[in-house]
Length: 278
Image 1 (spheres, one colour):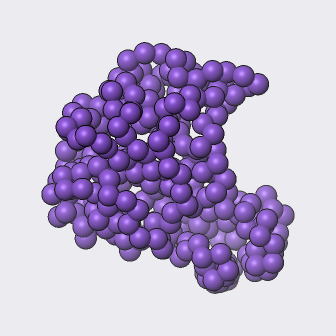
Image 2 (cartoon, one colour):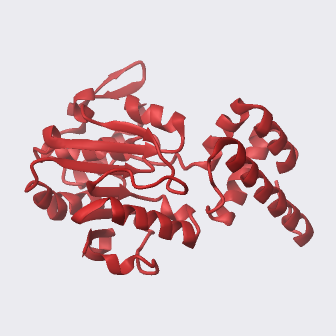
């Protein structure tokens, strides 16, 4: 863990930048545009949990032991989510976006940075309730293969269901969340029918290009971990991926206000960070 005196902080940052360069060269994952403050916190935790004394020692192991890199990915990528997180966002989609999507014969939705899948499954339930499930393809992408595996399985701890259910009802849910899963062995298993046409793919907003032509991009609480340059790159990708008049949803702490792509979008539900491509 870095100390607070300037000399050790600068050494930690030097080692941090070298570690990110090594990861990019060896594994083609580019974290160099991520917020330094966030990386310092996460890698400080990684040193403690992995019982390594310095980032240079961690770099040595990461370059030689792919299994160590796989463990480090759990610290470098964000795994904090819940179903129907910020229920008013999902209510805004239901009321302002879904009626437009219903005018299309088929719909494509990109859940960018899907993490362990809570948002994907939330959107799948919402679309099922709005009669859009059979004509919608969901693209769920993340750079963390373990997160993608969890998202594909759709199994979450039973003790989380009470909170998820509260969010679901606040988001305008039309049934009971328990209608969509069965519980066994301490896990809530969501119905595969909800994501029958889902596509899961490894995709980096830092290095990869346009994913597909889609009608809605939902990328929430991902941009806050990027620096300004990488935020602009990601928003540019979203704009290129969207059909004309397609929709973009961001997290509650995110905004297009300072983006160089801001003029490409107009707010639809400003309070919920829902935009439409001009």
